[in-house]
Length: 48
Image (cartoon, rainbow, N blue to C red; front, side, top):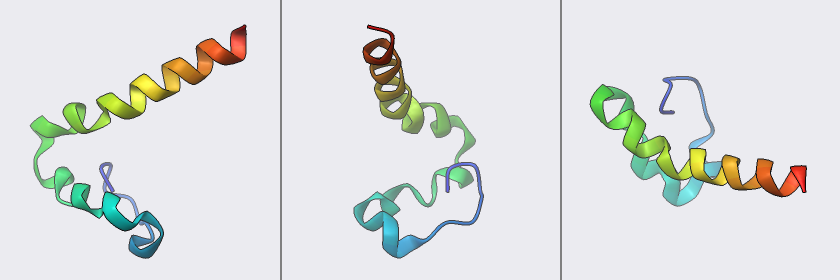
């Protein structure tokens, strides 16, 4: 979605609010901040 790849709109439900992000490149980083934070937390927990 953000990287303009195919995705299942029904599977994502409310996350479809981000389907226009690809049209606003300056907002991609902002949209990915929560994802990057969650991945960082999961990596830290995995390394403990």
